[in-house]
Length: 214
Image (cartoon, rainbow, N blue to C red; front, side, top):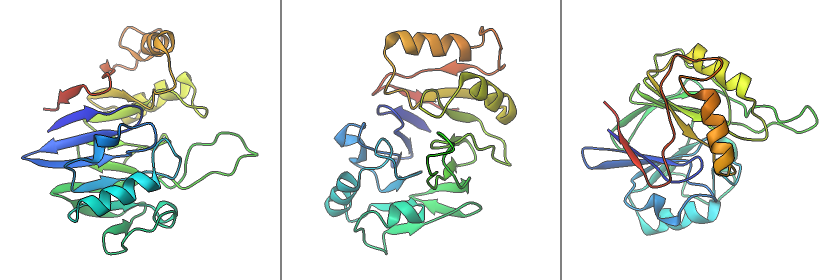
């Protein structure tokens, strides 16, 4: 399986000519949905979900289907037969990929700010995209997509989360608001030589860069 990062929180997974895209939001290049017959959306925030882009992709590709939570499904006028509402504990097949759903809520930003629904997706028992939450699946994770920066996150929490999930590798996502100084700073903490090591190899892909998962 090949993983490609498309900027910020969006990745695509490709295997045997099949393509799955996760969180093609407003910070994602418009061509991220091209050629994909399945899309997964973790939550409604604009950096993960664009109603306009998703509706256009559904219109352009009759084979495209979407799996997401109820809040996202209600936020745009998608064909109910092609937009599937899922929640924690669900399992389904999306364009040949086996997907399990974990989590219910976005990480807390502040007690005064209402939390939105958020689901994470474990794909083929191998790649876990948590959206904006530090959910711990009840299954082994080979590749953890690590949201390294956001208004809700602390490096200390990320270190503890990686230690608890214990993946084989961590790949950085959710870094679209970081400049190069921030990228280097976060990497220094989360990498294997950090002052509080996680014991997990850490990699940051540049937008458009791919990584073959074994």
